[in-house]
Length: 142
Image (cartoon, rainbow, N blue to C red):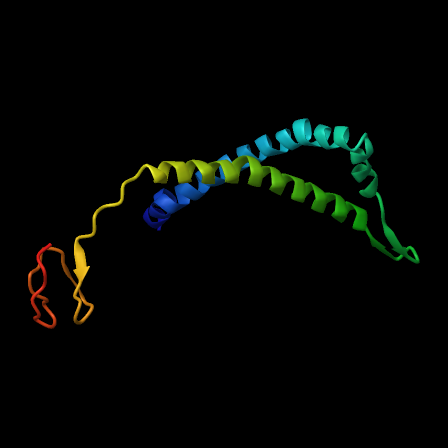
């Protein structure tokens, strides 16, 4: 039983998942810091100080006879925060990585095809073939 547990723990995908969680937590701290220290002051500067009004929204509630309380302002605040963080991740992480991937893939040369289509039966045959293996017609030499 201990050996099975050891195999499970040392299996590649469990270790990869553990590494992903740790790196994800660290990346979350980086993104949170970027939003708090750069994006939020930028929004506050653009809106003339009214960007901090979202903090006041967090305290809004809906009371139904003091029995049922909905903290809808807190939800709106968390939703806006999520959208800001998602936008930061998209524009500062996803888009640059996609651009770098496109640039890296542009330099790769495509290999010349090693097959051609038979004009008669449209099957794939080797490029150097002189006769189709399927319909037996003579093909032009490559």
